[in-house]
Image (cartoon, rainbow, N blue to C red):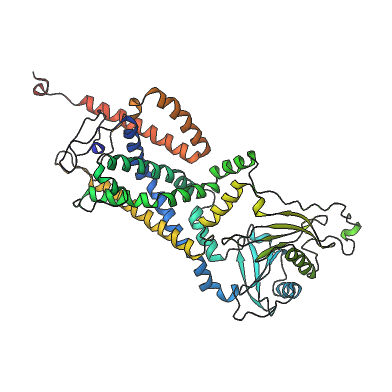
Length: 487
């Protein structure tokens, strides 16, 4: 039995190596603590990671699923030479759907249909989107969408984010993201230490030891080396997942704001805009809102944005107030991304403000790119394949982890258990003072930044202390035979 297979509170001494060779090194207090943390976190957090991996794997196929389910609405059969004016497309969309407030238009490009978006009070944060053939102004269909996402994509997105449980369900994904990086880093450290103990086996950091016989050694090899290969990708998923989680995401946004590293706002204030006259009427040709705008205004605003260099797919958002500019924003999330935005005065036909992606703070750029990559959009099908591989690999690592737990179970008649026993405790007591002096504040700070990590870690510690007290009392209650004491 290896060092990590002991279960009581005794300080472990050197034990025989699993292969019958020289005794395994006695773990340092830090390694012992990390081993126990990795074990408990792996057992208790793995179910959250399992669900996240399965739902994330399902989400990777959403572009193909959308094309299969809604291809007749999202794309056109024949690409024409020139699109019809947006005014005609909007008029057709309004005729097909007379209800709601027009809140945006995404002009179709290539084979993509034009999306005319309406807000309705009964839909909450969702919208009603009418899809129009940009070359014939024919309405192709209508869907209830969520920030442009189709019903199928929205359903899978909610499943991955919150299991369709609303804010309550968001806790599961935040717990998974909060602990994923801890498990990855801890696992690499433990595997490195195990392999570095024998120089001839360092190569097995990246290649499983195929010479190992059946049992926990072989399973551990596949578990660890697969985790090493996936490490960078899993750390990326953990970091990007946390950026839009409920609590850690709020802390991340606050940190970006404090560092002036958030996405720059785009001013839509019109200097010297004429005030609205009585009766709710506006001066002829003056700024208008989406509710009362002439559909031809969308063509004028789009032309100004195109002249300003906003190529590719864009979204036109009308002003919410009569003294505000309209906005046109690029929506290309595929590398190289197009995320530039301009504010347009529709009456004057001029750009009043501009925000280019190249001018964003670096952290804001990285955050945006990371989110697009996490969603499988940044590099197209290659991005989807990489995410699917990460999800499948993580599933394998989790299954192998639980298999090790079962394989390490005591099988002696007097100690038989259904699963493996935890590694020894006592790592904290053996740490030097300087490690505690540095480690405690860092752990508290990380727990504050990642609240669900902090709460669950505290829960692990409390439970572990209780189990330790119970184990010591049971051990002290066992009578010692005279033979054992030499009496």
